[in-house]
Image (cartoon, rainbow, N blue to C red):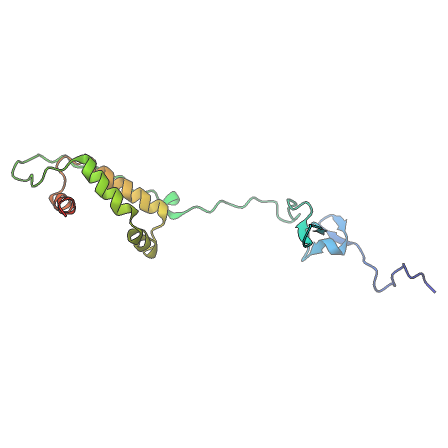
Length: 158
């Protein structure tokens, strides 16, 4: 008869070979070595924690590449601001740069505009880059396109 403390031959755990090292079967899942799970006793409930959670499986040692967004891969093309000759007949309205900047900022902060940009697959980073580019164009174009000037003056006079 055998001792009660000893396990029978069919129930004994055998070491498993992972890579070039032997490990216990409780530490190996799908051929990868894992840290043992330890229950940490807290005041209310025991919680499961990973002992040495930073252990990397022995089969995978390569670093994962950082996921990059579309705007990181393909930056927006710079647009030159045309310096057109200023005709007195073309000046419909004289706009202050502070007014232009304020109107564009209020437009960009509206939740509806942000929602529409997300629906059209324009993330926050792309939206901000487009906003900065358009604001730069509106502030530095030396006559501002008459269509844009009329829209901004209509918003100001509303």
